[in-house]
Image (tube, rainbow, N blue to C red; front, side, top):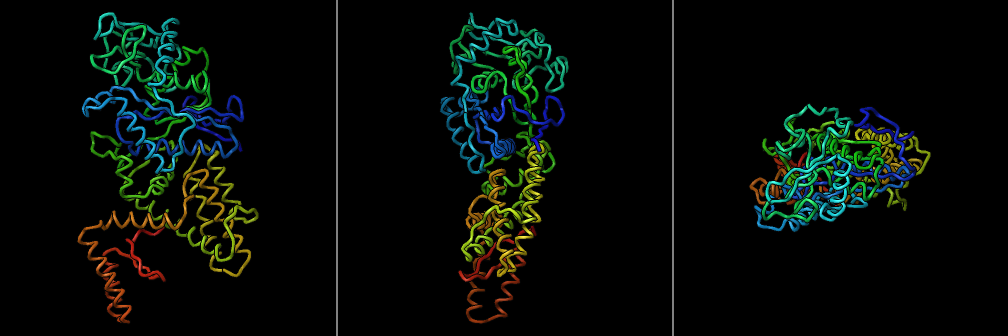
Length: 498
């Protein structure tokens, strides 16, 4: 089956046919680096991480570009508030981005260009738009002889074809980031170059000291690194208008060529059924979430909904994801022990029906517009087969089943970035994060639990079974599960059933 993608431009699902197969060129809009990344960023970059992984696994030769916006109004304001150089601030948050995405298993793009490294190319691109009469100058507001440069949407007949919005749909202006400017010919014309305010970071240009507008950067960087036309462009649904609409207009006006073949956009994150927003106080950074949940849990949760659909972030949904991920990793841990005892390793061997069927379903799901939710759903039968096979340790056919299922999860990790880590390590880390979330270290309830666990161990040593059972009942009432092992008694929070 060929890969099919939902193209925002055509509003239909289409066969994915790159311009020069097997080569694929993909650009995804990166972050504006003035703060730590939030879970909306996690949603976007995990989704496109699956896209790039799937394309590579299916044999395409991918060039993946994801930029950093390292000069912007928000960066300048934040740097001024902190008394920090804007470029130093941006570099600091670029490092933080890599740390957060690395924790979530999001691989680096092949190229990660920064706006400030492309100022000469941006100036040249704008000059050429002015020469083609797709852009015009207005007097700058801060320095005599300086100018701002605007793109004239009326000079580009195709404006609105990506978002479906017409030039008169929003007289409030072209961008949420820019207030209405009465100097513009059309209220929706947008800034390509902004004259510098006093003391603001700026660069020299034919229009005086200034800096790029928001939209121009991606057109210039994608053109430089991928060419005037390329295969895939991605980003959050909030970027369809105005950012991607404006990007498309200025690129096609400049290059006299179609800009992007396929546009992909991921859905929003809602918090307990409400749209995530700083103004609503329901805004979470990735770092805040990872203080309480393991990165594999957050990634699994994000993959559990199709990337184009809205996803509802809630404690319950993350708790459910914790239970499921823990169950799967514990199953893989038992499988590794089972295989090691027999001198075997997990291999994606063919001929095990349940595994062959699941792998075909997973690939079919991912080739159908990267449907990660359906791919994860295909794991239920192999997990059941794995559990059944390990109850028959002397049956060679069951050994093959365990090998094949274990190999399936290794293969799956290459596509989805989950279930590829060493199981025992992840099990321990998930359990510890659940302990800290529900029974924080230093709390009275944590001290009570540890005291009762110790007392129960002493009761068992003394063969005081009545005392041992009473303490277990008290712990269960607190939401604690006990496991007596050769290494000692382990305790963890009671989690919902997988």
